[in-house]
Image 1: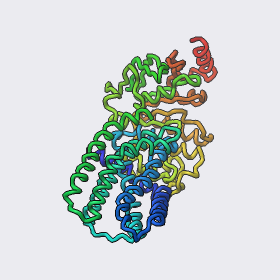
Image 2 (image 1 turned 90 degrees about the vertical axis):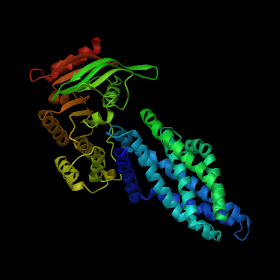
Image 3 (image 1 turned 180 degrees about the vertical axis):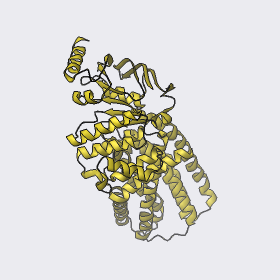
Image 4 (image 1 turned 60 degrees about the vertical axis):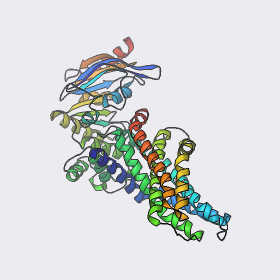
Length: 227
Length: 234
């Protein structure tokens, strides 16, 4: 297992150093999420109380839609010079390719969230009364679940002709339990309600993450065989 | 060293490889030649472990390739049609990345030495996206040589190389053979096959139809005649 994690980190650091050099994907993700926040800030009047109800949904909306942009690129870049075959012929476990991609995508999406969520609060003039640590925990668990499923489906759809359209069509229905739980938990925390109310949603998200991580980890080898 | 026993591969409902039985000895250069669509690339992918044969066995020193994938992949260096390299990374970064995956010891000095050997040392820190096909192929060759594999599998390695690079590659192949590395080459270039191979096998319609020992006594013209007669007759 340590070897798998070590190889995964090698692949993730290659992807991240590639991204640091080109800034193609992260730039696109940050611009997209900022634009979404900006448009919604015009669409909803920030003085209106209704905004409070919209914020939790917006946190996940910008995460998912900007994240999909990154997920689409994550395996397409491996098709350049058929580098994926190079990885497959290397003496590594196929699941380390998957874990490496999960790690790289998670770091990218988290970096985008670090920029876009404060911008969201700022443009909506939202005063944060909830517990920051719980909010961060919910965002991390939710993002991880999204990346776990998204990376797997990105690998699955990378061989298709219209992979950029296929990924959201496959991904969004599968994400619905995670997103419902994520929005509910975020709402409870942001409204500074009793944390115990959010704990069942957080548990649901954690169970989702574990279940899909295990399934994707073992099924990834079969996707690679077909590519 | 490497042994294929009755290997068959079906892709969809098409039988691409039929009962292939072939062996590669230590320090031998075996060339697999054949017309387009004969199944050469599928044969290679099955041998490397990228595709699972539908039936039959692949043994490396008596061990089944299917069951010891990582351990066996460590011993095989695979040069495919494409370079498997990342365009945004420099030659040194590409080699270091693959070196880490192959757990190469003393990676820095080995990567630099290989870059010097293939004549890319001066370009070591440049992103490879601007490299010519020949330079990419040189780097791909150094990627394959980096983990010092026991078996080299080279799929049309001379494609896109200039005369100087062809001479360099042949020199590397001969040096590796002399040090005991077994080499399997797929090529359409009869001159190179004749210059390098100890034995040639003709693959036609997914079947090995004939094999021939090539030595100094077998001329290029003789080899071509043998190939043409085997392809026409079977």
